[in-house]
Image (cartoon, rainbow over all chains, first blue to last red; front, side, top):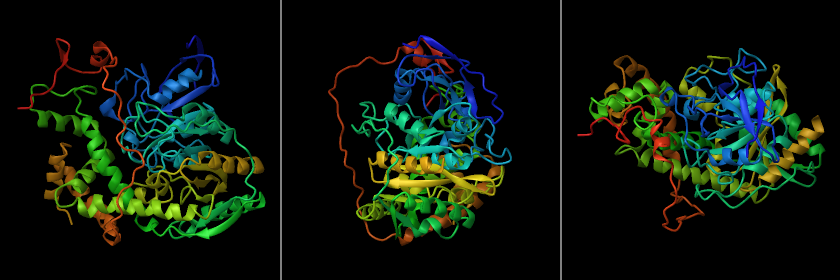
Length: 433
Length: 89
C-alpha cells in the first residue's frame, strides 16, 4: 500500500525530466520514501510514458512494468520519468523530441545517452537513484559522461515486461546511482524471474557489496586502448586499473579479435529488431490518431512521418533494408555469426580471467551538436556494444577526470556474475573515496 | 550503393513516409553506414545462434486482462467500445 506521499519539486535546469510527480506516493519497505526516477521507455501506470517521442505524446500506460511494480512494492517513490533519445536510439539524448538533456558537469555538453535524463537527475542530486535501459551502452555511456555509476545487468537477470521494446535481444533494464551500494540495493529489488518475461531467469540478487578483489585476475583487452580511444581517457583508466592491482588483483593482457565486427553486428541487429518492433506505432491504439477517412497505408505513413524523429526513421529504414529480399544473408545472417564470435571470444577470455576492464567510452562527453553525423555517433558505442552482444554484465564506475570531465571505468564479467562486477566496482570506489 | 530510388522504395516498405527534400541526405547517410557494414563480408564461419532457453510455456488458462475502458482511453478514435482504424481495403 502506498499510503505516504513524497513532495518532489526539483529545479530541473538540465531538462532531465519529461514528467514529474509532485506528490509521489510511496509505501513501506527497503526503499521506503526514496525518490527513484524512471526512464521514459519503462511503463508506469497513470504516468505519461513517451519514450521521448512525439508519437507517444499523451500515452498513459494502463499497467506498470514489472520493475516498476517491484519498486512500488519495496516502498520507492516514483518521482518522474526521465528524458531519453527517442526510443533509446542515440548516444547523446539530443534525439529526444522534447529537447536535449544537458550534462550537469558542463551544460555545453551532452549527458550521453540514451538514458541521459536518468544520469543527469542522479548526477545533479535530484534523485539518489534511477532506472535506465541499456541496448548498446545506454546506461553505461551517460553514467560515464555524468560521473555516476551504472550497471547493465546480465541479459535475463531483470524482467523486460513493460519496457517499450526497441531491440529485445540486446536491451536490459538496469540501475543508475551515485554509489555502487545504490546500484546493489536497486538490483536487490529489480532482479529475478518474471513469468511475464520468458527470457528472464530465476536468478534473484541478494548480494551486499564486498570491497575485496584480492586474487582476482582481470583481463585488459588491447582493443579498449587502441585506435579511436582518446589517449587522455585511456590514461585515466590505466591509472584506475593500476589501483585495482594495488588492491590485490592481477591484470593480464587479452584480445577480442571479433571487436572488428562488433559495432556493425550490433547496428545491423538493433536496426532489424527496431524495424519490426516499431511497426506497432500506427497512431491507432495509442498516439496521435490516424485519419480514419484515409486508406491504411496513407494514414499510417502520415502518422509515422509526423510522429517519429529523424534517427528513428533512419533506423527503421536501415533495418527494413537489411531484412529485405536479397540482403538478409549479407547483413542479418552475418551479424548473427559475428555476434556468436563475440560471445566465443568472451567465453575464451573468461576461462582464464575473472573480469575484464577498460574505458566505458572512448572520449569524454561530446559538446552539444558535435555528433551530427549518424555514423560518427554510432562509432562512439564501440566499447559498450560487446557486452550487449554477449549478454554479459558490465558496470561503469567514475574513475577520475580528463579535461575536467568525468571518465568511466568499465568492468565486465561472466554471465550472472553481476555480484563480482559490483564487488570490483565497489572495491575501487571505496579505495578512491 | 543505394540510390534515392532505393531509399524511396525502403520508405514505402516501412510505411515511414518520406519528404523529397530528405531523400538526398538519407541516401548519402545510408551509403556511408552500409559501407561500414561491409566489414561483415569478412566474417568467417557459420556459427549457429545458441540459446539456453527454449519454448517457455504456461498452461492455457484464461487470466484476467486489462479492463476495456482502461485500454480504450489511449485510442484517439473509438466507436461502440472498439478502436476505430483507417480502412485496410
